[in-house]
Image (cartoon, rainbow, N blue to C red):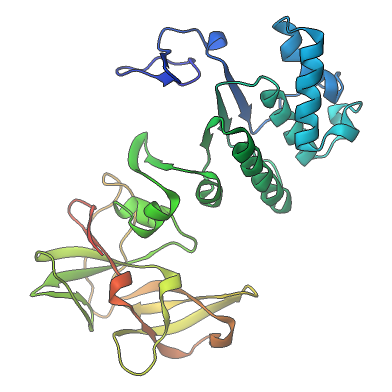
Length: 324
């Protein structure tokens, strides 16, 4: 709809100060980059960058200026005489970005531009994209299923599910205060642990764990605990029983998978999940992130410390956040 390929059923779309609902796609001054590079295989990098400008009858000196500036910005100066078949995946993606840059558009639309790259190249290009955005300051809409890309590149994030907006906010705001269960389970890696609990008589009750609660009574809630907020329990303080199953050392941290007494809650959207039944003696999967010095062994039974101010509470009937 922003590009003009589909019409909105209601409302208006403005680019800058102009409403563009009735403006044709070619006249909206938007540049697009997709996961498929869509480069012309028989053209050199220079000609790929310049082609769109030539079609718009841009003066040759202006084409030269724009191509050279984009080439320098993206590190393509030594590749201008090569064809796409002679380039790596990362180089091809930079050419695709360069073709959008030379347009000097009012807005960029990027649809999964890094999904075809390997992990190392994805990190490099992610930093490059942020550098370009900081330098040019052009409004950019970036579509991705990768939450790391969303968190690191976005000034504001729009989390969507089934075509519906779930939450809009700054990355840290969405991470720290998820609006509903879907956002809570989607943002964060490893994802938030979600267990069925109750909020009654001024307490959050999660099995044997009791934490202070100042909100209204809510007999059906999901208690959310981020893995990075859980630590081996010290002396005193609220804690949960935890049995270690699998340990994943990552160098700077250790991801620990295990189980705890309780019933897990699915983080799907409102129409995708039901309130789970409580089963006597049930155990729920739980993940924690430790410092390397605290790495446990599989099979160890231990206790996880829980900080009350880090606990998220969601109403299971509405699936909306009701407190933290």
